[in-house]
Length: 96
View (cartoon, rainbow, N blue to C red):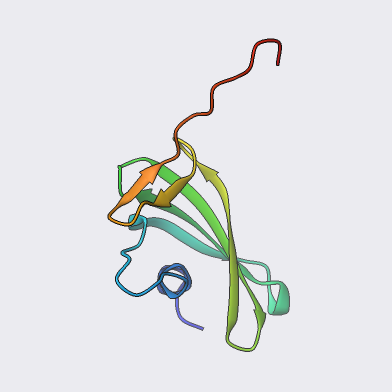
């Protein structure tokens, strides 16, 4: 298995549609946690807007990887068809 930075780069880029750039600028730090089938990679990223995020990825089947965001400063991001942007905060209803 390659180093954790190479692994997280490959995992996050593999899920993107053709022509869509990644939502992160660079991997700030990455490490493997655990061993054997329970081994995961955890990484801190600098997102395209300069804020940070933490993601973890795990191998779940031959050739298959899954990932989830553990933390994302500034809230979730989405591809709007031209660029990555943050979701707009949803207004709170009175009394909630």
